[in-house]
Length: 469
Ligand code: 2HG
Ligand code: ZN
Image (tube, rainbow, N blue to C red):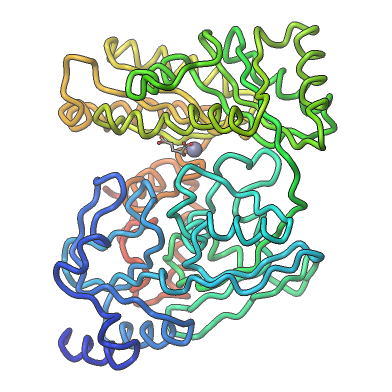
């Protein structure tokens, strides 16, 4: 079966674009090294027509299809299974920015454009594509859409879903759903694009999108210390009000998370020493008045402890580098049991405290790395092995139990076990455990309608069988 299928595929997209054997290696393991698959082949189509053709071919041969973007996901959503029967479809050759319309504040891009390249194209036209995250140099727009990526500016601009006007998708039967619309108002039935955003490739392959842009504006940034995590929300509320809602990012970092950065990259210095830190960024004009004025009023009201305002672009970058160095610091120290929960804004501080107590009660010697986009309710509560225990050993022996504690707490607080990283393979069981049964049943119905043969990213997001696990 597969020999003739591969021959056909070579005819459709060119022999050089059908990779086999060792050439597949870099597409077969995820970024965190948690998932190792074996692909039948890696297919690198160069156009939407080629994507459609290869989908039809794979479906006619019963070959499962695994869409693959920048491979920066945390949940194994872009890795083939171990069977050697699934085809990985890399979108990396669909890497063209199609249009930037500065006046209309829109851009259209192919799915394989990296987020950084899309941001750059927008900025060359004086516009801002506000989606931002540590992996932006390699993650791709298609993956951002498929996971409904969040990141560092959700507080102001929303997630990828909020930034999307139109979408082009190759459906599991090979039809092309062309909704590459730039309309901001269009009430003509179901908003089909929403189905594919966050679907992790389980309903089709996203090939292009029309995105919203904003006027580019200078950013001003400050590092603030607060006395306790529960001081974060009142501070954010005041800063939003005092600045005319100019806050774009509000990133919380515990001292313990930042200690990992200093430990692994000692050349980095913390601007303030405190137990709780916040990186605040605001839209500015030509001066830094808005930020400084808002912060000094907040200080007068006793809403913060201390503050350092970045005095140059270079300093601004240094502050951001500290924040963005937390995940790589964890990685250098052997990795962590990672969590990506969200809870209602009013519950963030309570979640952090209750989680801390619950984890330390059972694992008193672990190291905690707690930080996140608390301005939108998203906490990364990561747990590292005790200093005298091997990281791999700890993760293997205790990882699931640690995650159970943290996920059930989020669930009890009406939160989510995946705020921005998606479900993939890693968390599909959690969807069964914590997801609403009616919502899950509707998801299954949609999946069965659009992909009756279960060939689109099989085994991701939804477990193949019913609830028992
Ligand atoms: C971040 O906020 C990313 O830096 C990664 O979502 C979080 O590594 C993590 O746990
Ligand atoms: Zn994050």
